[in-house]
Image (cartoon, rainbow, N blue to C red):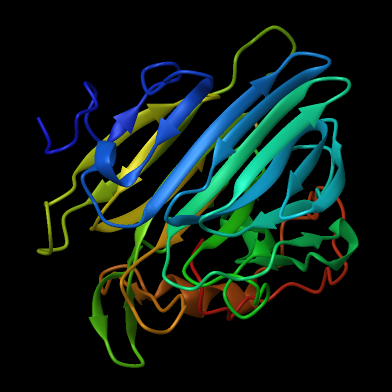
Length: 309
């Protein structure tokens, strides 16, 4: 058992963390940590949902379908997308201490990525065409990262960091294993993290993947070896996380939500010393030709990228 109030501990199978209108509802109280939140909202055609942001900032990100987000006297029409495997989405940032209303003419599924924060920043719209799409790794460690809410990319947030990762079937991502569970000035950030998964089916066969987290000697000693399917989430308060493995024939999507106590909004990681050598092998191996799956503005890749997502 863990300190969370979730029955399944750090791995939350689809439906086990539902609450009220949300198919998934993770907040600091339920996760027993300080900052990171994630909700998945499902709306029927013509549906609407209103909520108060409280002490957290949020990004509303369409997973499938489009919606209109109203807050602070602003109205943002999000075109969205058919699915997470079909294209990059636009999004809306909403500040803490605000009232928000989400409506969807045709219905859809929407991620609300959140972080407790101190500063109250302006609401704003993020266009899909402005989201940097990069390729990381090479060979069977190749993956695509949609940096819609990354530190150093989206500067309109106080604490919240969020990205999307797409891994072709059979590949490993979040590799080499890495951590960000203690503050070391200029070396490592202290960030709680949520992984939310969607796995592409093959015909009528449901997709699956695997997630590994091993203890780092910090915090709760998080230890996870989980088979993950669409709608699942994994909480990572600490520990070496990775690999995230996509089963052959099933592309894997995961949404990463991160936040922590640091003064600087930064994503600084430390690779596991037993596996960091793999980065040196990437220079001699091409990026998986299946990538980008879609929408890359810069498809040259970054095989020596510091990030491990």
